[in-house]
Each structure stands twice: as structure tokens, then as C-alpha cells.
Image 1: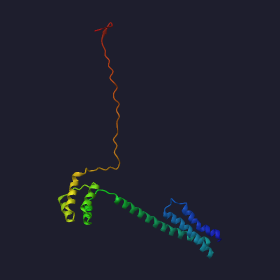
Image 2: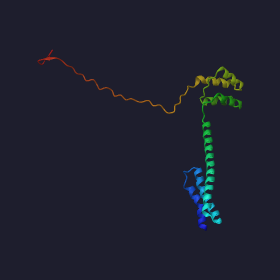
Image 3: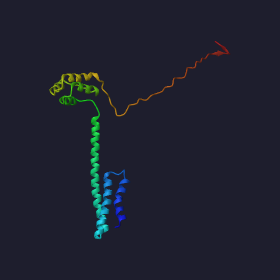
Image 4: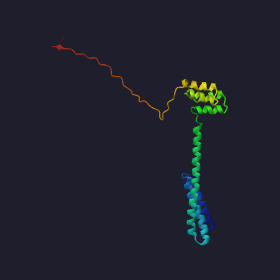
Length: 192
């Protein structure tokens, strides 16, 4: 095999990768692995006198290997994307729960900061007597518990819907003005 053919065999996968940006890593791995395997198999087969068989075996082994590697890369990217999405969802400030308050208190966050967090997230707590006792046992201060109890009457409940609800608007034309008319009875042109 001459120098130009050898360069062509190894440049083919590079050209393949550049032109297939919409393919998944698994598909790219199968294609590139098959091409590299066929090229390598042809070179080895040429040395033993079986160029076609070497290319065929190399293409099969290369395609399977490349597909497995590409699939592993795809799965890794999916896991990374899922972690990013979960972190973004967790970063969204939403209403706090009772356990959030307990975690903050047990982490020695100041009462002022806990109360500020409760107010800024517009959290609403409906605490029973047992809840209040449990919070006290978990180390939540009286000031924070009083703030939590006060939220039940402070914030209006919000109702979230998937899509905005639009009410139809009806335009009603005003009725035309009343036209006055009268009638009378006449007898030979005279009116009674």
C-alpha cells in the first residue's frame, strides 16, 4: 500500500466525524470504529495475503468497539445533563418546609436568617401542637416557631395553573335609538 492510500485510510474517519454533527456518539463510534478497523484490518491482512478478509474482520471488530465506547459517552452525557437539571431544580427557591427550618436550625443558622428565608420564600406553615413540640425538640427557637405560626394568616394562598385562563370578552352593540311613530284614525281626512 503506498503512502497516499495509507493517508486516505486514516483521514476517512476524520472526514466522517466532521460531516456528521447530528449523529449521536454511539453512531459516530460505530462509523469511525468500523472505518479504522477496516483500515487496520486491511493493512494486517495485506501483510498475510488476505486483505479483504482482514478488512472485513477489522471493520466488524472496530464497529462493535466504537459503538460500545460511543454508547458509554452518550450515557455519561445523559447522566451529566440529568444532574445539571436536578441541580437547577433544587436551586429554584420555593416555599420552605418544616424540615428545611429544622435543618437550618441544626446547622446553627441565626434566627434572623431563618426568619428572613421564611419571609422571602413566602412559606406558609399550618402547625399543630405536636408540630410545635417536635420543632422545639429539634432545637428550633421560640422566635422562629412564632414566625412560622404567624405565616398561616399572613400570606394568601397562591393558585398555580399550567396555563393562563383567559375569559372571553363579549362586545355588545347598543340597541338603535327608538323611532317614535304614531297612528290615528281619520274619517274623510278629518281627525277625531
